[in-house]
Image 1 (cartoon, rainbow, N blue to C red):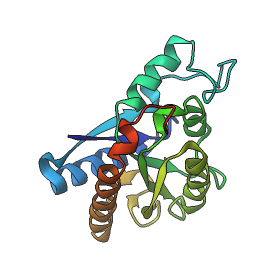
Image 2: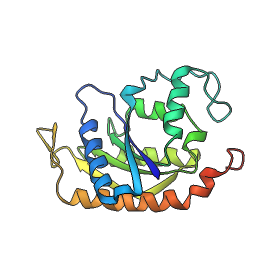
Image 3: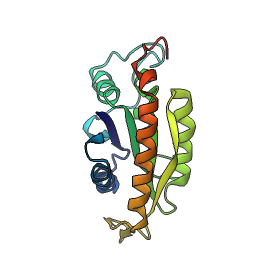
Image 4: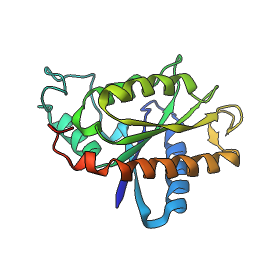
Length: 193
């Protein structure tokens, strides 16, 4: 079974990401049934400090226990849906920091994005897309852009508009197609990738 990590990209107190990620997971799981397993991956649960590995992830695996736990969690997934807010036109520092901790674990896997913010986190997702290529991730096209004005009550209580459910289903269909297509690449040894 394909394992998809739904990454909650914010650790901020009062964040909206957890309710958005749970909705994405539930819509996706209902849509595909037993074809995939959708797991929440909450950055808060990993408490990664600012990157504290002396050697870049591309050159060597991390030596700290928190890095090894993070690598194991991310490495177990076949694909990702990143749920991200937008802070000052960028993704949260906690999210980019978590991505920077790893290299091999991201490779050969597709990634899709669900953004939320005043303008749907479009600029934050654009920056994440630029980061995906060098990590050898397959950045898929569909994106769900949720507006704090239209999809939240008082900017806090998540009430997505009806069309967004169809957008999530479309994103998941493409993500699964890419995950299946890239399975041989993921099965190859890291040196072959």
